Length: 145
Image (tube, rainbow, N blue to C red; front, side, top):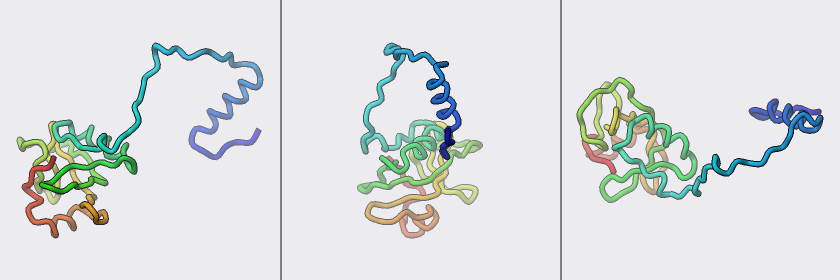
């Protein structure tokens, strides 16, 4: 039997081979163990700065490319395209507060901080946050969300 060239293909091929050989007995699904997952909507991408930085970083990765993650800054929307948690940051800023420290632009969260790498303003292309900051006066020190 031919091998598939995809992640986890060996497991799938081994399962098919075992089923064809009669070594696997089909079982009905236990519906009490099933979990319902609602369809993703654009609104699911809104970042809640009161959540921990680790959770927000995972949300950003998981929702790329759809529905994407975003926050508000004043009257505009700002997409967060790439970021990582700042694990050793200790501070007492309000969640959503943008600050600059140790040559990083970050946002305080409910637990820790999120270092921004790439952002995208409405109707614009994605930019490294340092480049965005140079053209957006008042960004550092602003309160997002």
